[in-house]
Length: 196
Ligand SMILES: Cc1cc2nc3c(=O)[nH]c(=O)nc-3n(C[C@H](O)[C@H](O)[C@H](O)COP(=O)(O)O)c2cc1C
Image (cartoon, rainbow, N blue to C red; front, side):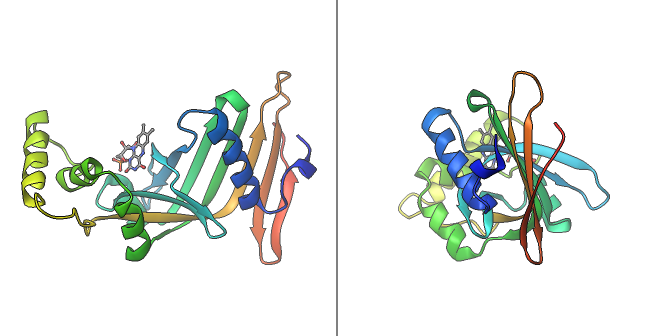
C-alpha cells in the first residue's frame, strides 16, 4: 500500500475501505469496541458500526450495559475493524460522546419491532436467573406496547467515537505489512508509516 492510495482525510479513507468491505465481506460493519474502567481494567466486545461522518464513528447500545457504564466513567474507546478477505484492518482510538436523543431516536425508528422489544426486555449485562426470565420479560414488553409504537428507552442510545488516531493496515504475505497511522493535530491530520 502506498500512502498516496489513501485519502489524506482518514474518515474519507475509512469510508472508501468500508465500501469495499460491504461489497465483499459478510458483517463488514462489525467492529471490536474496547472500553476501560477509570483504573484501566479493559473489556472488549463486538458492536455494529451504524454511522460514519466527519465527526467520527457511531454505534448504539444500552447505556446501562457494562460498556455504557465504563464509557460513562471513562469516555475513551478503541475500535478495531478487520476484513480477512481483503487483508485489511483499521484501528481507531478517541474520546467518546453520547449521541443526542434526536439521532438515537432516528436510528431506533429504523430498527425492526422485535429488536426494539428485545431492548426493552433485556437488562443488558445484568445477571439473569434463567432463559425463562428473559422470555417472560419479552412477553411483558410485548403486552405493554401491544397497541403502540415501541418508544426509545431512556436507557438506550448512540455513542460517537471522535478519532484521535486512525491506523490503516494491509496484509502482505512476506509479513512486512503496511501500516499508515493518522494522528489528529491542531493543524490537521498527520500521516506516518509504522513498522509492521
Ligand atoms: C456481530 C455482532 C454485532 C453486535 N452488535 C451489537 C451492537 O451494535 N450493540 C450492542 O449493544 N451489542 C451488540 N452485540 C453484542 C455485544 O457484543 C455484547 O454482547 C453486548 O453489547 C454486551 O456487552 P457489554 O456487557 O460489554 O456491555 C453484537 C455482537 C455481535 C457478535
